[in-house]
Length: 140
View 1: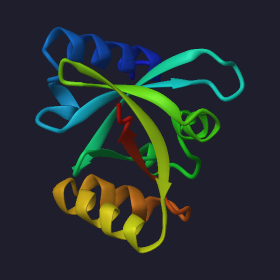
View 2 (view 1 turned 180 degrees about the horizontal axis):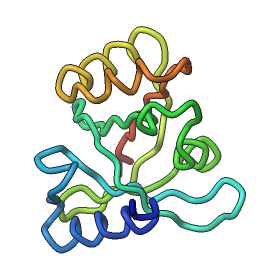
View 3 (view 1 turned 180 degrees about the vertical axis):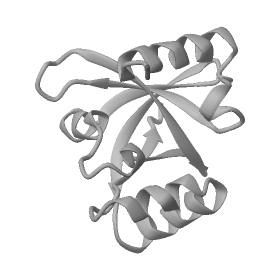
């Protein structure tokens, strides 16, 4: 039996926090962050483990949902409430979510797909354009 997504995510989150941001299983060796986001409708805080691509000081995330035809809930939450925080390794960073579009979006997605071919497979599974979000650290 496959665990419910919330159970799966809870285990990843616990492992991430217990091991200074490192996890095994399907995310072993991959750059992973914990995205704190506020529900667009519920207003509740959620934490989502998400792979990212480092791009300068930005953390770039991809709303792939493994190639599903709908966007993940965290994407809708970021659009409604873009001021969030991320846990990267042992640090928590305040960021602003900014959707990346056009050629820059395509370039970033291609970089991620070259590093992690699963992202190319996700893109092939769906007719939607998978959103790319830059998480830009707040400046003091």
